[in-house]
Length: 92
Image (tube, rainbow, N blue to C red; front, top):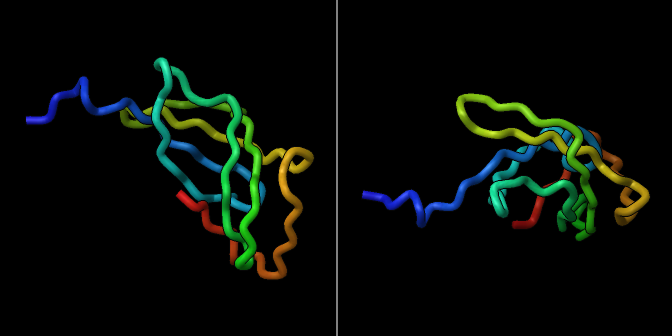
């Protein structure tokens, strides 16, 4: 039997735009709250870059918190992708 106290509460991250648009991740709630902003190290066209995201909306789906994040281009590494189907890959 799993002890719920040893299993951290999580939420689902939805990337609304930017190089990770359409991807989802799972993050741990800290102090019962989601991250308002965070950075992601990701590969886009084989280049490792730091991308900053800010929370823009939340919703609950099947009892799980989902937070939508918007890309902050001014705070992120620049990137150019010649292939719109290659959205990048978060390095976890």
